[in-house]
Length: 151
Image (cartoon, rainbow, N blue to C red; front, side, top):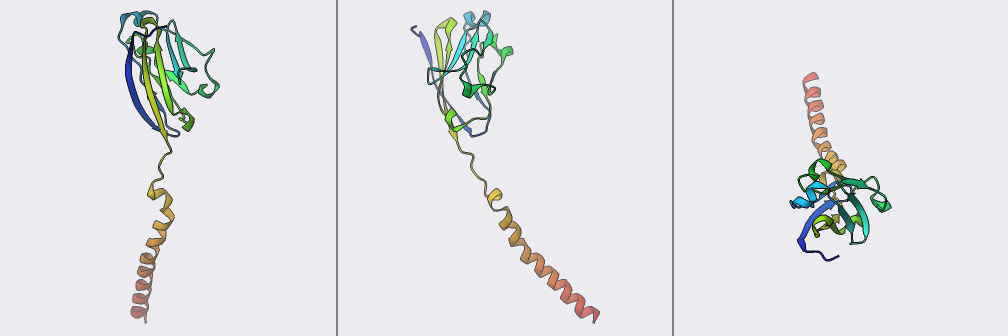
């Protein structure tokens, strides 16, 4: 099948464990009646299929089972974006949304990064240790003052 038009590659970034939206939309009237849209990873691995405006999981790759949703209420507006949950490093790559009714396709490049570790997470114990000398100084000052006044 020859694709008449192709939308430029869109970049989407996510961290491991995130939920991300992979966009795909087209306002062509032929899609608004009974849309057929195939989402593929690397052009061959089945991510999500919408056949005649119904979801079809028959050929969905195991790695995407129970992790991909779409927005059926948006289909009549030409929006066939998908939501990918629990993003994995292996999800990174090129996704193609084939809009069969209008011979068009959208490509999305998903880049997946490891979630950065924030300094407060890794140093929370050290932060508490640094505060202890201040507390100890106050305690000693209190005890010293009390011992001088009480004697």
